[in-house]
Image (cartoon, rainbow, N blue to C red; front, side, top):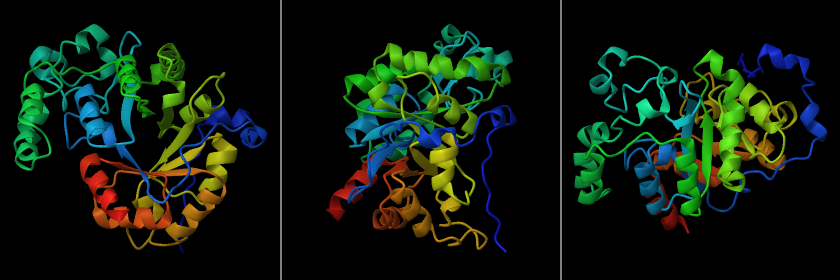
Length: 321
């Protein structure tokens, strides 16, 4: 017997009517599925530059991505910054600049402190030589990544770049610090409104209480996409009627592909996607770097493919036309 998991909203939200969104005015969803999916650069384009930096975003844009994806969380002084991990250790030189705080979370640093860190050299050392040899980046790009000038951007800087490039962005809200649960969504929405980018942004999160809060926030607010790595018995009903969102962003394994016998095809991934499409719900799959899975995504009509390699996916899609 197969077991299906339903991501439940946190207990504080049980007081809300779970079907409150059913009769609510629905915001415009992610673009409806077309013959070919949209290309979303994961953290800008992790294979093309230091993740979650403006440099990676520019590289992803130049490679032909339709939008980019970033992660945001708050600093000690409640400034939304663009960072994936709970700490700065993996993607900056924090161990050199603040050796006694190398393992401290982002929430222990002020924005000014974070801005002192080099967010590019690690990528240049680890991935730059191969990316250059493969012709995926230029010598000028690699030199810049290694220069020590790349910084962790604020969400405001990332949104302004998105606007400058006439682009769009998936802002994933990360919840690492319990004390930030209250100010996190308001600060992110405030930044989006301040930059005039509501129509260029979608919000996503693995924390479905965050998704619910954004979906029911005072207008204007962006559309919402529900992130999940767990299987949902009826994702169409959960996304639309429980959360009030416009899209589901599932991992490939939780759709029943590339996973285990426990998940494979029960219900068939194609049926899940058909239900979502019939309900007008977008499907943005992550993180897909395998051309075989790209082909399946085209076949079933997902809305967008989130990938580390927007350059390779764009080139592959161009051959499918």
